[in-house]
Each structure stands twice: as C-alpha cells, then as structure tokens.
Length: 179
Image 1 (cartoon, rainbow, N blue to C red):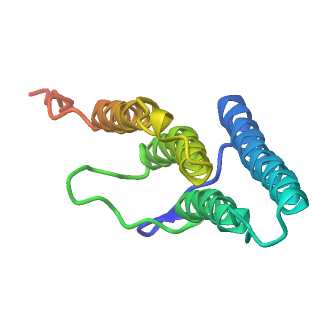
Image 2: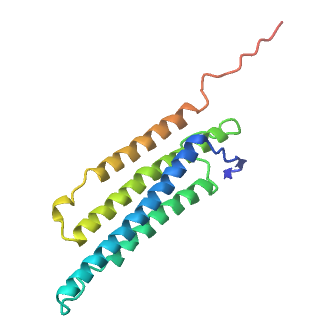
Image 3: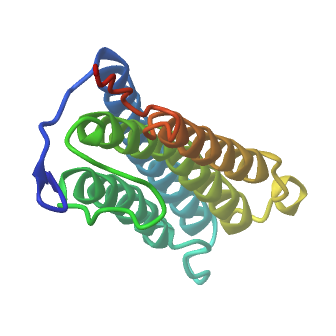
C-alpha cells in the first residue's frame, strides 16, 4: 500500500477485526432475511393457487435479491478503498513520520463507515419487503437518517484525527551558536 511515494503497511487492529466480523454478520442476515421472505411469499402464492388456480402470482420476490448485490457491492467497494494506493492529500501534510498514522486513520474510517451503510441497506431491504406485501404503514424509518448521521460523525471524527497528526508549525529546532 502506498500514499503517494511513501510505502505503508496494513495494521490490522482488533477493532477492525470486530467491525469486519459485524459486516459479515450483517451480510449473512440480509441473505437470510431475503431467503426467508422468498419462502414466505412462495407459501402465500401456493395457498392462493390452491384456492383459485386462475389468479397469477401476487408477488415475485426475486426482485428482492438485488439487496444481496447491493450489500456485496458495499463490502467490495470498501475493501477496494482500503487496499488501493492513495494520492497524497493536498489539504494535509503527509510525510514519512505520519504516513502510517494517516493510513491507519483512513482505513479505520472506511471500516467504521461500512457498518451504518450496511445497516441502511438492510433497512432499505425491509422497506422494500414491506411495500411488496402491501404494508405501507411501516415504510418510513428513522434508521436511514440515523445511519447517515452516524456516517457523517465518523467522517468528521476521522478528519479531526488527521488534523491532530499534522506537524506543528511551532516545532522549530533551536540552534545555539557559541562565540
């Protein structure tokens, strides 16, 4: 991994391992919910066909599979953002001394942002399923605006951490010259 022409290594921290595990669990829950919803819809469609064969399927649940691809896309994009080489930021000073800290802050921020984005995908899937079965009472959710708020807080906190590692302008070396 590189930041400009400076080589940095990937420090895999315990917090990032926990967040990666949580992301995998959320992904598995999304898959399980979609498959359970599909079984529920298939059972309802069989029941309706059992009563009246002339009625077509009420709900085609396979459109719900798009949420698996959206969640997988979020994970793949976040992994790409973690492992891609970065340009040196124009706004901040990144040198040999603070490049590793800068890289760790960026990677931690990306790992942290992945969780609320996956939760927003899960909530979008739940709203989509509610609409598919005709339950329009529960389509408004406070979860998605809260996920956006948490994402903004994580990004702002990470920017503050990057500012904290910037070299101080007051750190001038004092040289005494003896006469």
